[in-house]
Length: 231
Image (cartoon, rainbow, N blue to C red; front, top):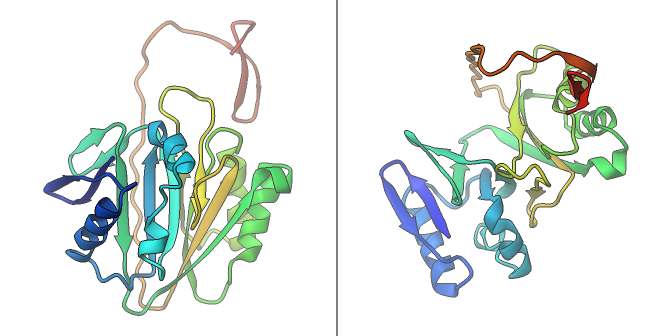
């Protein structure tokens, strides 16, 4: 496995070995106090099965005070480049602000709207400044999920995050909280504190490319047919 944690250094680690786990801990300690409150780990899906099979999920055992949010990806953006088949870890520490993490599975809730409602209602409302959502990207409708959060929490609470990926396979995506990631999971992280300042920015747009097609069947943001053929 390859582990990246510093803007200008790449360190290869086999986290399935005691030596690799020790090196991982020592490397993290170079740039962040291990008493941090929240971190996020993005796992490349090509490693996920071997990580789960070999029980190679050492981060929680190494950093017991952290909340570990993990997700499979379709490529990892790091510093000024994009990488594939790597493991990235981002650690976040606050002096006064707090976080609350909640997780559920869409199979337990029935649909994306009910999943979002359960998570939004599970978050403490007092002092909430922002919510980050890390969601399964294969069987969860991200649009319905975010709309439900906005309806429950109000538009004054910024919502950020993303959907998990699995490269170009489109078979299954995995998300976890403090355990090995699983299909169908959705994690919400609430950020709290009067000293926490939230800023947002966005850029969008697209250019026409390829052959012009006609969408002949869809439901909201779900595409079923193009030019009368199954999508």
